[in-house]
Length: 179
Image 1 (cartoon, rainbow, N blue to C red):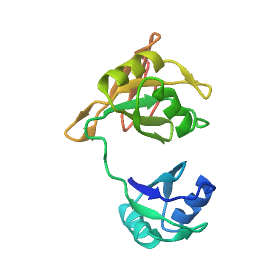
Image 2: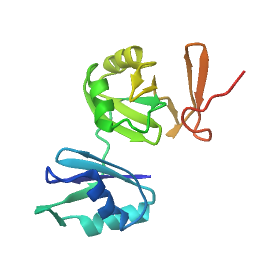
Image 3: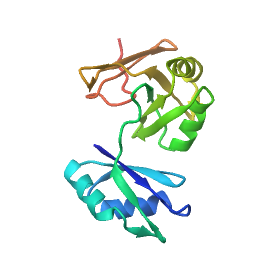
Image 4: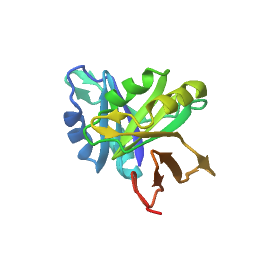
């Protein structure tokens, strides 16, 4: 999946309109408008690169778009995994929930899980303690610091309320295994 930054959006540009614009170039997995900018996640790299080349500078409601690959400004941020995210939950709601505990550098919902990047590890740990097991959009979310190895995602294990939740890339978010 390729993450694209879209800047210089007019304030009245809804995510649905932006999604349609990018879908002309390929499959769009997610499109989040955050004020004057947005992040669009496209499935294939070649399609994303073509969209970037062809949409850069294109006027939308009078504003020429800034379109480029999203760059990681997250070198020192602490990355959290949020499991069991309701389909009705929005990126804005999730970000606001975590911002009660510190500065959120980036926040992305991907299907029924999300990644939240917090500026400081201490703030991230506070958010884990405070938010894991709380409700968001009618579903109980689970939060844990993301563990990585060799640049690849590894399984996360959760132990909340006598239930063990296991997420592995092959199982999908929120998968439950019984003893």
